[in-house]
Length: 263
Image 1 (cartoon, one colour):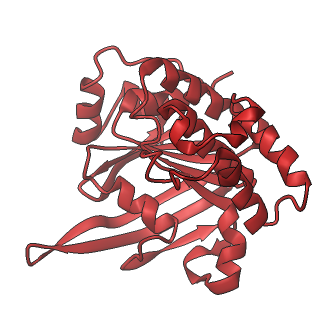
Image 2: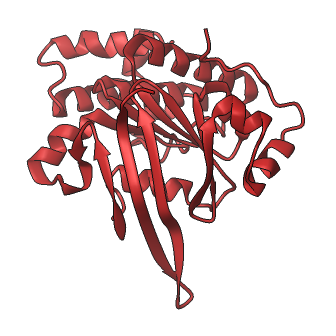
Image 3: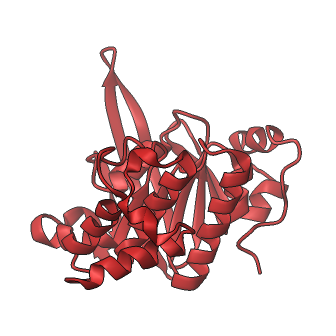
């Protein structure tokens, strides 16, 4: 097995609700290998998005550790964290909320190139065009407003923004659930292509096991804040061991057995 790019151990996070403590994450441990996809699946409200926010340092954990690229991710702060943020990116479900709706597509893509000093000076314009072409959009879209784009087009821009910093890991939080079936399939195919070309690892979060099955090498099943099953994608789907995994498999009557990421 490949060496872990991301290693999570004993991660816990609780919130207060109606005067009581609710565990969103309960002793979560996971590994993701470089260049591989881990699908994190579970019912809505089970803690998947909380895990994503803790990974991105948007929410503080109560306990546990995260090591990313051999470094203690939670110990980083200030300039050191800012420098390394480009290595872990995220694509959100709500494409309007994740962008300034008044920004241009070119501005959205130019900002990370400038902030993380990926490409300097006039060369950034050519890099913006290259990123757009890579996600299947014409370079002329750089002059368009985010508000002018369809949901599928905005999600492609979100993917372009995520890969602009040349990350090692991208977290997708329900990133294709709002797209229609045809656009969803094209976006999933794009992700598989990008992974093969650039060796990016993905954490693909969804409540839909069929979608996760299409792109994931391994699956982790989450239930009420805990990881209740992990394993190779085919094994988890063909012989689920946990009650939660069996329920997810049963909810997809004609689960596709071929994974897009396979040769």
